Image (tube, rainbow, N blue to C red):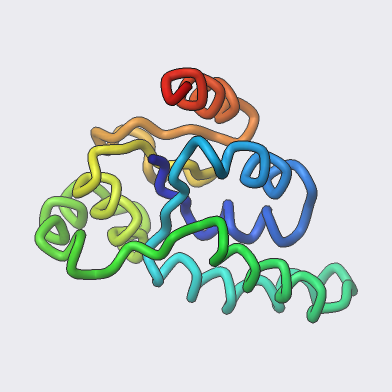
Amino acid sequence: MLVLDANILIRAALGSRVLSLLRKYAEHVEFLAPETAFEEAREKLPEILERRKLPVPPAMAILNQLTGVVQTVETETYQSFEYLARQRIAHRDEDDWPVLAAALALGCPIWTEDTDFFGCGVATWTTDRVELYLSNAAEREQ
């Protein structure tokens, strides 16, 4: 299992590397994200695309398709970890508490490019290194 931050969902919609990794390992690794991560990605992606002068609909379609690969973690699953998550991410980006709370509740790492998660007591993986985790998880499953 691996909890994805909104910036990973955005990267999946914008480029090929993240999307490729998600597709390659979807049979072996559960990719998860709280609904708030999807909401943040839906909010920020059009702004990013407009700044880059790129069409919005294709990237939004990819983002919407990710729900077939990335499972939504229900609030009930991680709600009891809100206080702890907010404490650990305080003075950083407290809006990211659901991602951290989901990781705490599920006992799994976070895939992010956001350094706000570093030092929060949960393993974090960045895109340039996450395939180490994904390939090990796939091997364990076989």
